[in-house]
Image (cartoon, rainbow, N blue to C red; front, side, top):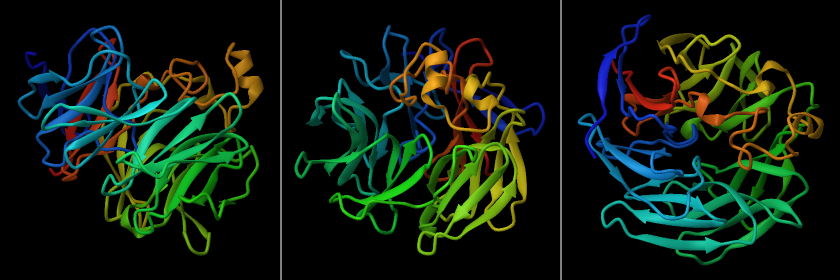
Length: 357
């Protein structure tokens, strides 16, 4: 496909910003917990609905030539995760992997249930995903070669499971609604809540603070916080309405978008909380939940004629989404660029911004 890329400067910071896609359909990079850049920095993998259903595409960067990577049954639009030369993704209750060199797909594992995004460990050897079946909620975990898969049950909806970067036998995940942060070993043992809190404290978007092994999370819309993985001690990084957060590998900076008000996309220093603005997002940032200071409960979903499920099941709901109206910034592997989504043109498009000056 012909390239759609164009470049310009952000109106408030002067940052170089590339609009990677320009198609009248939904286009967005990966979820904020995963980088959309290939490790060599030469391609951006993204989801597009331009063929009628969510499929994987890749754009050369910065040249912009676009290639369709998947077709057939729709993929889970926010499920892709890149490791080395492979893209793991969800399709129809199954985990798949695509080899970027050969363009060959392989089924990793299938389940009688609905899956959230897939999260690989650093090497792509182990995979984990949230699952909801007719009988239970929980996680499924196993190897990318298709062996060793098990279901780890949990009594509530699970979202955003992630392997610890230094101790990959541990998985951190979110329970929805509160209390939010939990951990479990990948063999299903050691389940525990990391932080007991009520629904009046809107803890959200937790992830690992790079290679420090600690956790970073937001108390929406007030604080950006850090939790010591060993002691559980919580400290405040910044009093700031950081929303979706993505730390760099060293754990020295936290990339974030903002909402209510939308102040743009920022880099926050993890040591002292100082910050610098990268660029505007100009996203519509939809979702009734982001006007409140507590988790969405069953009654919130029923009021929106939905049910008590996370965004992984209702990506166009009015409670947490639609997700493609949120920027979801994330670093490139070289950490010289970021990607984000903006529907500033009337349709969600993929953007990349240079952050190395």
